[in-house]
Every structure is written in structure tokens, then in C-alpha cells.
Image 1 (tube, rainbow, N blue to C red):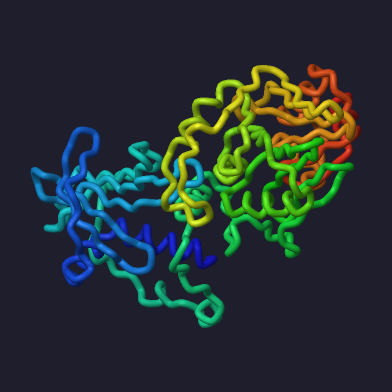
Image 2 (image 1 turned 60 degrees about the vertical axis):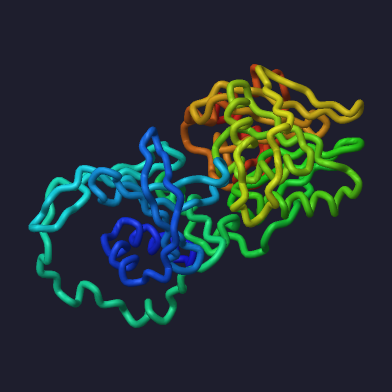
Length: 393
């Protein structure tokens, strides 16, 4: 495991274990009082326990039974900002004289994302000591758990959906060692490289337009810094988000802090207004400020941004991936930008066209644009002609 995943795993084992309560009993000097906390109309007496590093658990107790009801940490989430992450314990049962919470829900800001039910339990079942033996090679090379700025929610949520990249640097693809950089793929058009996801920076007469804000504000700060160095004096006026998924929008706040207007597909505006209104005091990459007045522009079908010389188009297309997903197009460069439906330069085209690629092809035809190449929110740049030929089959 990377140090980030290890720290996250250890924290979650601790949260769900009865040993946490024993720790609290044995270490009263690490306890501190907490005001009563109200959740869904129930008021819980609570106590804080500083378990080490950046791990502080707030344990809430059922006012009727005195049993633990919720075990909370306050986490930074790249979408929801400062977030309450709770393990909710209920349906306490007696197994061999020991009380066990048979129902366990995990909630973020009151929304259930995982649930476990214990239907049977056996205590002190014989387990051979060899089951716990750690190979010497693993001991010698294993990372120590990270102790600060652990992006717990990123690690947890990416594991839940099965796309977690177990790396010490969340934004770098394992296949890349050069780090973040800008590649000029057309005059005045820069494509980021070195990250697991990409942005596109387009130079206009007196400002810049950026497509997508992957992962987190650290990533965005790097891209913003490179864009300012490449095009000094040109502010970022628009951030165009192809769709709402967190690995392409998690760095939104850094652009809003620069004064950029946010451009999204129709139906996504409310989501992003909530996103921008949420407090983010725990964010290690961006100082807290009020972003709730950020301009959010919804595109119903197609919209053109022009400086009198260059145009940038955004087009909402029907697709199987996300509601209100948009592709971008720069007519003078005959260059498109697409995220997740196609990863040009990374994923070879299949023998038979799939619904995602068909959506790109249909969207291009419906919009009446004539791209020669596409840059990707993942991957690099690829010619459009092979996809046209595939669709023709």
C-alpha cells in the first residue's frame, strides 16, 4: 500500500473496532469535551478523541442506552468541502455476552454510501499464528502510514468505485515519471501531461479558457501556475467542465478563486452552485473564502465563446456516461476535446464501435463540426479519422 492508503485503511479499521473505545478509556488525556450534536432530529452527547496524527474521532452516544451511536471524523472532500463522515451503529445484539452493533452504515453529510449487516458472529475462533506473519521483504519495503494531509475521502471513494490508483501522488499516472507539464498541441492550445487526468488551456486575445479541473486544487494550482507563466497577463475567464464526475471537477475551487466563470451542461448548475457554496476550511491546497457568488453558466445545446478572432465551442451531446456531458471544439485548430467517452492516444479503438464512441461520432455530426484530432481528458491526442472509419463499419 502507499502511505496514503495505509493511513486511510488504519483509520477505518480503528473507527469500526471496539478497540477504539478501549483506547479512549485507557487514554483519558487524549479526550476532550464536545458540545451535544444533533443529527436528523436526535441530540447526542459526544466526546472527542485525538487518536494521533490528523485523526480525531467524535464519538456520539445514544441518549437512551448510552451505547455508541455515531463515530465521526471531519474530512475534506474534493466535491463537498468540509464533510462529516460517520459510522452509524445500531441494532445492538448480544453475541456470547458481548454487545455488537449488527447494523453499520457509513454516511457522508448524512448520505449513506456503504452498509454492512452482521448476521452471525463467532468469537475467539482458532486462527493459526502463521496467518499473521508478515514476510520480511514486505517489512523492509512497506511504506509507513502518512500522518498529515491524507485525502481520506479521495482514497475511500475511489476504492469504492474500483478505480483507485494506489500511489503516493494522487494526480500522477504510474506510467509517467516526468511530472506535470504543458504540451502545445496547436497554436495557443496547451494540453496537460503527467497527470492521471488532463486539462486543456486555450489562449484567447486577452484571456484564457480551460477545460476540466481534475482531482483537487493542488492539481489546479499547478495548471494555473503553468498557464500564467506561459501566457502572462491573461486571466482565466472561463472554466469549462465536460461533466460532473469528481476526478474531472475536484479542482474547481482554485479556478473560482481566480475569478473564472464555470461553464457546465444543462441540468448540472444546481450541483455546482452547492459545490461552490460549501465551506472548505480543511482544504490543504486553497485558503478558505466565499465562492458562492461565482458565475455558473449552463449550456443547453451549444455555446460559442469568441474574442473576435478565435472561437471555442462547447456542445452538449447525448451519451451513456453522464447527464449534460459536453465536448469542446476549437474551429481554427480543428481540434476537439473529449473526456471519458474516448481517451485518444491511450486506449486503442475496439474492433466494433461501442456506445461511448458512438456518442462522440453522433455528437460531432449533429453539431456540424469537422475535427481532425481530439485531445482527451485522459490519454493524449489522437486522429479523428480512425473513429469515423470505425463508425462507418
